[in-house]
Length: 156
Image (tube, rainbow, N blue to C red; front, side, top):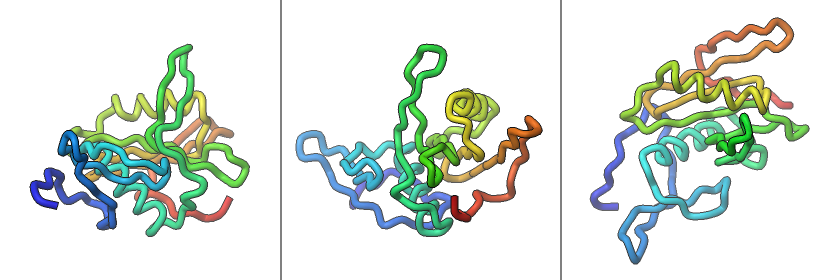
């Protein structure tokens, strides 16, 4: 596609379905998790590549993943970028994305930690497509530890 504006990411290449809107000329990407065309923003570029990596490299099932998951936090509607569910439809991992030019800061971790107050996922991951971080929560001890990489799917 000519005039493509987004950078190469620190993620495996993804075979994304892209098209240009007829009326506005904006680029859209087909989101296989939502089953619809989405305007391709820098954050969406990261999301689609990250989800591709989760499915095709890490072995997570598309059928247990959802994008833009709504939740209520302090009586306010919020949306998690991606949630991966376990076999019991309980949240296993929450992923928060930022555009490649947005640094991953404590504020990003605070955002995902607030979401996790509602969802109680085992893993929290953040990515701007260039840098990725993941931590595992141990609810029995009330601690967390950062992992070297996004964990592969191991069942459950």
